[in-house]
Structures are given as structure tokens and as C-alpha cells.
Length: 181
Image 1 (cartoon, rainbow, N blue to C red):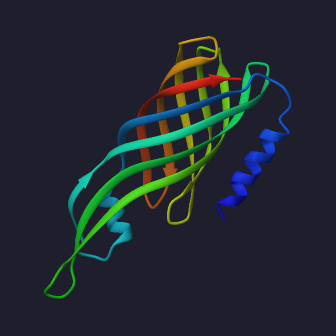
Image 2 (cartoon, rainbow, N blue to C red):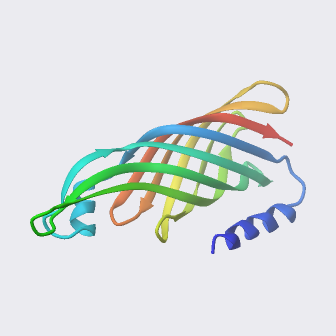
């Protein structure tokens, strides 16, 4: 199932035509906004209680912009992101069950970029592959600092929305490297 989006992205890149192309590789820590009490209420049996949790997130992304039309650039992103972790106690007779969940996502996003070369915004719909497919959206504000003619240091403030059992909103700051071709 995951091979089809990767194949589609490869074909888009191969037939994109000539324009300045860029690739961004970033890593970014952040915090995931999620209502864990509501999640447990919707996803667990009655009487389950939240015992421990951590909403720290970290993501690794690769973006490739392969064509442009005026101020707009078009590309795609592949991202892996650890969203949050939690532990619950589930009632089960006289011996409760302790369950731990680590929530991560593998994300594919067709991207649209608008703005100048050194300061711009990315946005697009996201396909999040967790236990199934969850639809979302992302937006990021980007500032680039040149290191050489073809290499920049990006600083990105990013917000994702994931329509899961409850709304999941990771907010993160990313940095890494941008290469221009």
C-alpha cells in the first residue's frame, strides 16, 4: 500500500520539467497538542484511566520541490514523526491491565510553497499512515540562511493537523539543510 504514493512521487519528479529544484532535510522537536482524556474515553473500555504520558514530539522530514509556476513552487514531503506516548490502566476483573502506547506517523504530503527564496510558507494536505490512513493538513513558516551558493540552513516553524480519533496537533521547530540544484 505504501509503495503507490512513493511511485507516484517518483513519476512526478521524473516528468517535472526544468526549474530550480531544491531538497530540504530537517529534524525538529516539538510538542503535540492532544486531548488524551477524550482519546481514552473514545478508544478504551469504560473505567480506563490515564496513568502517565509524554507529549514531546520529534520529526524527520525530506522535502523535494521539483517545479514552479511564478511565485509558487510544487513538491512533496516524506516525514516520520513520533507524536506522543501514554500509559493507561484498563480495568479487568480484580487485576487491572497496564497498557502503553507510542503514537507515531509516516506522512506523505503534496506541498505548495509561496514566498521569496529566503523566506516562504509551505502548506498542503497530509496523508498520515498510523494504524490506518488519517487525513490532515500542514503549514510551516520558513526562513533560510545561506551557507554557500547551493546550501542553506533552514529554520521552520511547523504546525500539523491530524484528524485521528481526536484532533492531534504537533507544533515543532525544524532545522537541517537545503540543497539547490
